Image 1 (cartoon, rainbow, N blue to C red):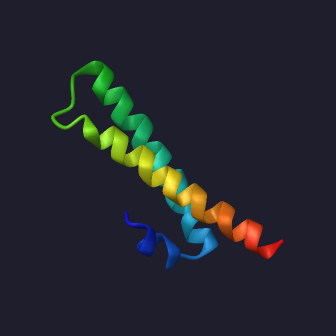
Image 2: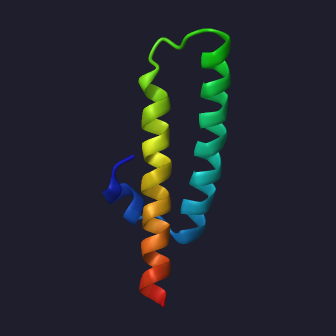
Image 3: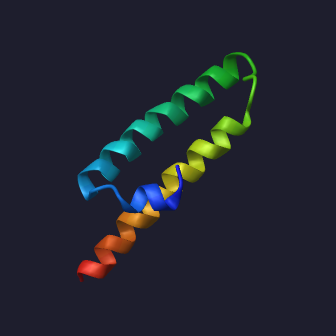
Length: 65
């Protein structure tokens, strides 16, 4: 997910996406510990997506104050 796509989302949608991505990350980690993933870079990409979402959410909070 690109930062331009994140900026188009509402605060509630960002929070929902963060929850979904965290669940996806934990599932990927579990699957990777059991048997190696075909593409272990998926874990890194999901972590970066979570960071992008959190960054945008925090920027909006700072802008309000």
